[in-house]
Length: 351
Ligand SMILES: *[C@@H]1O[C@H](CO)[C@@H](O)[C@H](O)[C@H]1NC(C)=O
Ligand SMILES: *[C@@H]1O[C@H](CO)[C@@H](O)[C@H](O)[C@H]1NC(C)=O
Image 1 (tube, rainbow, N blue to C red):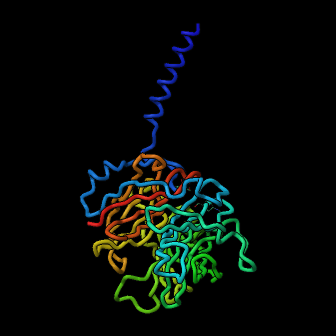
Image 2: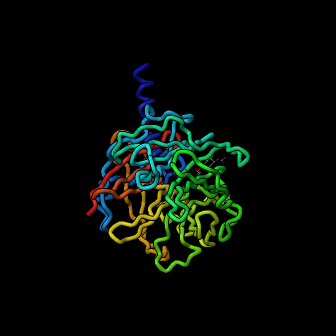
Image 3: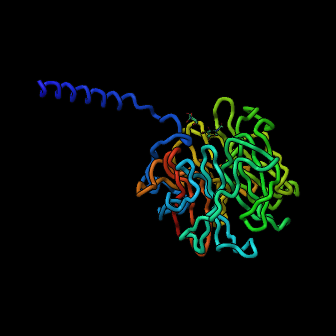
């Protein structure tokens, strides 16, 4: 009897397995967004990539739970790394790394290290920016901070979201204590196809590399917007001073082919005089599209990094932040399931 039912179970299991295979959708739904194994492995990437993209090797997790002295949700996202030694008078260390939980209540945290490989030390009073700021705002969460040096003001600027529909900024002379600046823009104010946008978040800010840009486009920001149809695109905004921003009416990148419908966390990366927009998509990998200094020509997506399947480096790689230093490229990124993500480091040689 027992043997009999075991056999039936085995048959049922085999049938289910067969069904699962034949019903498996071509493109799994939900990305960033939700946990998903990368569909393309590093080895395939290396085999199929003919371009000049470097190959990054996974080094280590940067924000293991024991180094998080503020960890309300068990997940952290969106690394932003700056050379504090070049920016501030008496920094805690040479390099600062900002990161945050994504789920409520969020909260921007800081780690510092004298070398990009670490060891990293959590700042004693994390978080440094929270979901309530005096009379300025009270929101469900703040997250996805990007920190840049503003030479004209001799101050660091931080861009972050809270709520998902509001891009804000703050300034600091030491990278630790911040003064509230204001709202860069609201999703609802963005024009163009799919307007009104429902989210505007995950911004990365940089000096506009276009030598022909006019003064009111001295700064550029790449960020994600979302539409009522739940399509996440990469948008471009420009600013004269880093404070007030104009968002371009046309989305800069939309998902193509297997990328699904969701793109997020884009940055401009310049290497060997070539310009790339690096970002992540529903594929669970970090992609790159070649562009030019004015970000007008946009190439086809290529895979820059897929999780190595070593240690924490599984499921999905996202939110790239690449630092070139001392002959090496340091890729800080978000890795793992959306509800369990951490920050990791992969390194490549500069060629
Ligand atoms: C886009 O992201 C949303 C939110 O996680 C998800 O519900 C949706 O399925 C995704 N769409 C695609 C096509 O991947
Ligand atoms: C903010 O966006 C994230 C996806 O990027 C989503 O998981 C979260 O629920 C959103 N929060 C709110 C308050 O809408």
